[in-house]
Length: 302
Picture 1 (cartoon, rainbow, N blue to C red):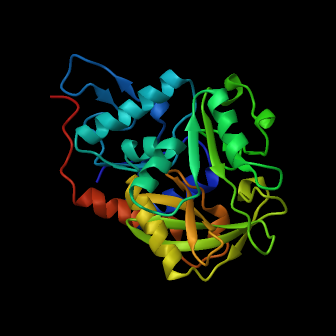
Picture 2 (tube, rainbow, N blue to C red):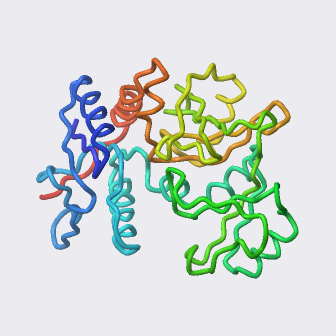
């Protein structure tokens, strides 16, 4: 099989995936979506580095190169074009778009009937301020999140309308979610790694503050994942349509769990330290099985 690995950064994760692919008998081509070109006038206009004679059979996505809105749009267009040509792409561009956009994720989770904290998304500060005045108060805040963001960056607790930043500071989108405190006062939530429809690993994330992301100093702890949490994470991944994902859960205060986020490019270095499952190997197994079962893409040149 002709396999590409798209990984622009994150040496640890890239090396784990490379090792897992090679252990499966596959020598992948490492490339960046930023280096893919479109050249018309031939048999196949999409030109992927390392694949001069034919498109790859499969592309495993680890990261998308950062850049402008235009550059990101083009790179997602490349992934859509690969899928249209019969290439297996994990995660598929539609899933990436749905999970990167927190509003789209929340919409899909709610439409699927899954529990999730109350969420509101507005474009205007006046509308967001009215909502905060009605739903928040000191000691009972809402969480303001960037619509496009990860690893706990840019989060803020909002208790009063005057706490809201200007529209330009939030790219004219206010994504607000009810903050769900734990009864025991701990700053703790949960990450479940779902691959190919199954919850294969999970951990507690515990912090010294309310932001528990490992990237921001949160501590990964072992977790005897309840079946209810695993099933909820699996349902959330299915609702968003991701092949592999990190699903963030929080206890709902009534003995159950709620879905916070679904991540289509999850990190798992912290999770790997507290679970026995080889996560990279599991991702590679699922990806290669999907690729083997797919039709082959077209040739690049006649």
